[in-house]
Image (tube, rainbow, N blue to C red; front, side, top):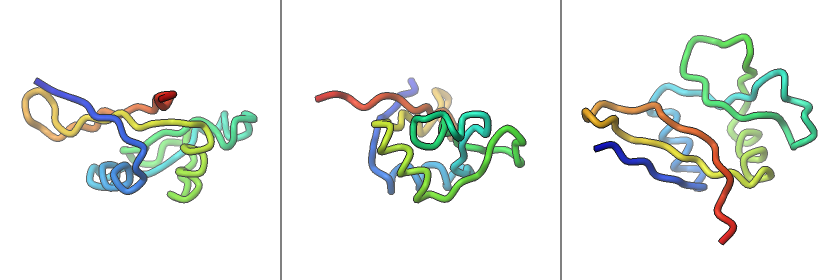
Length: 93
């Protein structure tokens, strides 16, 4: 069975992403969307022309300003390393 976790811890997020060869990025078409920097993405592939790679400091500024949490999975149900993740709204509690 595969499980997922949610975190707002910057070190946990950065380690998970870098362990999988990912890079912080924003969607180019949303960089000036009025919400503080654009839609965040993790880019795991060769350079995607639709994404702009950004520094971790900028990534976490946008992450915190938009009240996001990071939902991620460490392993797939068959035990392989997972790259599944998405950004979700933080709990209000």
